[in-house]
Length: 329
Image 1 (cartoon, rainbow, N blue to C red):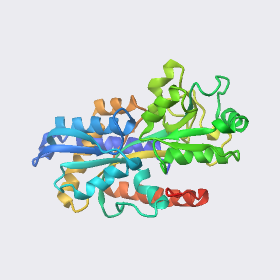
Image 2 (cartoon, rainbow, N blue to C red; image 1 turned 90 degrees about the horizontal axis):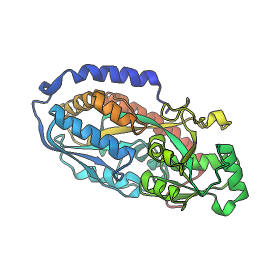
Image 3 (cartoon, rainbow, N blue to C red; image 1 turned 120 degrees about the vertical axis):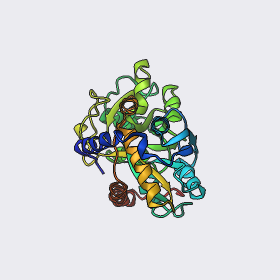
Image 4 (cartoon, rainbow, N blue to C red; image 1 turned 60 degrees about the horizontal axis):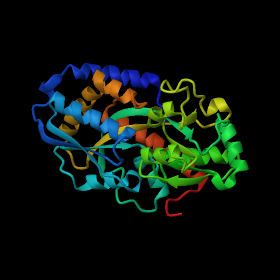
């Protein structure tokens, strides 16, 4: 699903109103809040988790807050972990859409049920993806078509990394290769930052991941973003042409981070968490902090988040079927 800027503005405006509610909304403050993410420290998923966890503490939703990085299996471990968590609002999952909307199409058996093991709380942020190359690729390669030509000429080096097998960045890399009938081999990492470290170290030629994950590495000159996935150029990389601008049809994608609660929570807990999250996501320090990582803060009602997941699940089901990928394969 491509999320419009209007949707972001409307959601943020609503959240700005909620921000005025203050601590009165949290009469039943959580003693110790845990925000769970399935990816390691330093990346975009970890960043939004830490920014929001701290803001929830400051605003009074919780007296104390920590982030738990339950890494592994491309984000699955964190979601599976939620199945045994208390339902009092003291544990909130933050996850990219892929783990809930794409994984059901690629894994014959998941250790969690996206529809029944977690409950939507609020949208958190939206972002575009970038495709970047490092020192293993000649400096003369400055666009996606030029990279694809390089792959054709160097098939033994034609590979790319992503934050995990079956993630949206993984499929973007595959789709880029298929656009020119090239088999670009995929290398799965436990998060985008570990992949980028190998990229700038010259161990892997390219990485597909959130735009914001690359920005801190660009000044060194060892990381060059060749294209972005949004319908329009990313405001975080305005000089980089989109995939569609470079002639790649039907290659307009973005993704979102959502906040979820364990199944079995009461309506009251969902309401309190939603109110607190929307207020946190409207805070200037959160908006600015997320922007530093290429994320646009956005919030929603639980029902809106559920509808977004349903739409993306249906869209990616068709794409995964066309690609023919299964995680076990």
